[in-house]
Length: 207
View (cartoon, rainbow, N blue to C red):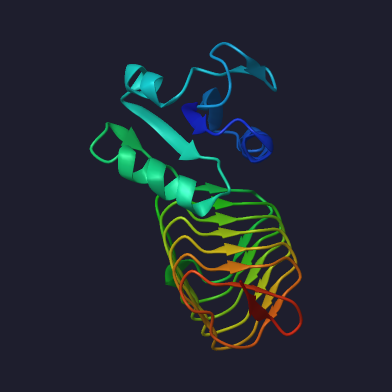
């Protein structure tokens, strides 16, 4: 049995814990969370403390179970050089149609119902949440979070630290640059510049 820790004890952390419960060879040993008191039980699993306590448990396996891309990137940077490995978690109902041409970076979480087709490159600590579909020739950068029900067509380039809200549709050939946000339900038909937020159908920038 492979034991690991989760960093983030909120709703997403509990969802990732439930994903791990469906994997016969993995078990959650504890949570880390800077906003939850040490010793609190979350779904029966103890919170070990915040970042300060992480070094006590190393070497360790850990998955960042936080949805906010910038927070994930900050943790990834702070953990650099620590004796931590980041396993890839895939729910048993997720589908990778062409295993040989799909790359998943360290610490990726692939939730139930996700479908990845072919020639896809996913960066480190990327969340692919429930029932997302990822088309051919897609690249997603480090620490991005793709929320439930997102459909990404072919030849799409998504940068690092991008947040795509639930139910959004990204059309063929679109480029979404670093630190951008796509609102829930948006239909993205044109490129999204770095740091911009777009919403609506079709998606347009907001201040």
